[in-house]
Length: 351
Image 1: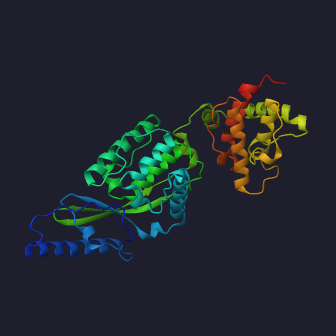
Image 2 (image 1 turned 90 degrees about the vertical axis):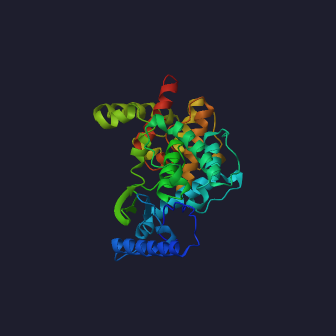
Image 3 (image 1 turned 60 degrees about the vertical axis):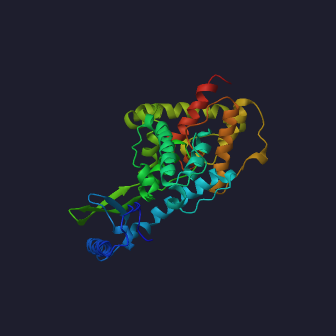
């Protein structure tokens, strides 16, 4: 059903078999088709007649089909689905359609349990609409507990998720991916055109709204990791250069033992090789070459190296880095400096 984001269930109507009632339904169907087609002409949205049945002041949203064909929009959905399936691989759950697979709370429950590493106190299987919404409410309340401290704007609710509102579902999944530091790179500045249809005084009125699904990775991640480096980058570029020099001096002090030297932090650590080697030097052990790619050629091989280096850091007693391996590989200077500064803090006095 092209273009539909949110479908609210029709109210059960007494006397559905009455001829007068059928005539009213037909009138509403015609009214809905005409109003929506007129508002969107010449590129009309394909609307099923039953989707135009609205109560007075009831509102329904639909996505412009042209937005659905935008490469960034398609990429966002693909990246999220691939990530979800990777997280849920042990559950033998395969997500193919976000609207159909998330509306009843079943997949969302499993996803949150895996991400948060704890069991949710909800029913495993729910059949009725009431039970599904109750389950959804409990899950969304739990999610809000995670997101509230970071001030993430909640742009979804039980009705929108259960109503298969794709925009609401995407807002929710993007927030979860950012909060739980998903090892993915979301496309930036993804926007969609949404058509809002509302019934007032018996007539359907339409408005068009641009919905922003993602901004920049920096801005989205900034909700969760504002720290001294954000301040340095935003307000103290002179002090930032001093910190960079200190970190370069620190890493070269150890990499020089292997006749290696660093001059550019963001580029020379991007393939993960120097991160792996410096961990071996700092912890005084040899890292077997078969554990990482000494001359990585692909993005995935570089991500493997950085991920492996992060594991070595955690084995050495450091907390899990805030940065994602993908950020390091993508030459994000702030992320690279955060990782190196953590090493500097612990190992600055080691010769």
